[in-house]
Image (cartoon, rainbow, N blue to C red):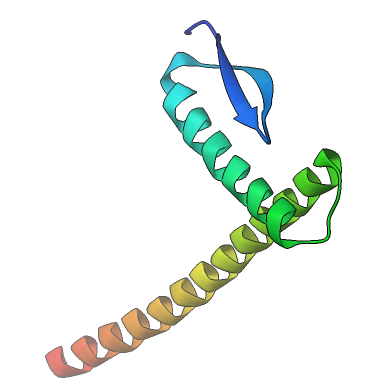
Length: 96
């Protein structure tokens, strides 16, 4: 098991030190950059004031997007399953 490493990330001009496995360092930095960009956008274009509130709004936006993607993926999987069952049935009928 690898040791955790300290990674400094910047969110709205504040520095935070986060521990993570070395192999996840790049992903953590990329995630922090995306979060920082989202927080800056909320701060610059919204009426939300305060770092904590901006962070909560960014988190809510990310979770909402994730849930939408999961719902869309679930619907896609269900549709694909139906299509595969119909195709299998047609193949079975053609072979019979």
